[in-house]
Length: 177
Ligand code: TMP
Image (cartoon, rainbow, N blue to C red; front, side, top):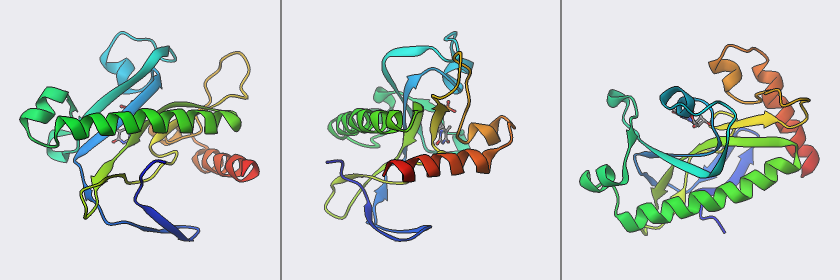
């Protein structure tokens, strides 16, 4: 029951999507502390958060996509506070769905980034994509809590094995479905 822009899968690397007017906000949900959260606070990497944390960033390359507050979003009139609440609630719902989906295939959903937009009737739809490019996924098959990233952190942190990691996720999803 998540409204998304997805219409149809055309082939392995092409989808048909509903055209949307993208809202210039990046909605990041974190279940476990990692990445920028740990660089900008004293929270230790790997700390499981008591409840999901939602961090919102302004999509603006010139400003380097800064972290933004609800009040600043209101001040800038980017979207109404009702629509922001709707987006936040959808993000929490998406987290519950994705977290349990990935647990089935022994992956820990650490965090992810979503983008939303308006369709021609002003409905809010989930846009963009969900992939290891915008999710942190850790292998739950690892022994003694070692972190094994199967996501873009392999590229970001120069760990190597990017294609192998993405292929592994693809394989686990296909086996599960
Ligand atoms: P962060 O720890 O760098 O803030 O990233 C949090 C999550 O958001 C992580 O899964 C990567 C994703 N992300 C994007 O997809 N695009 C971006 O531009 C940024 C900054 C993060």
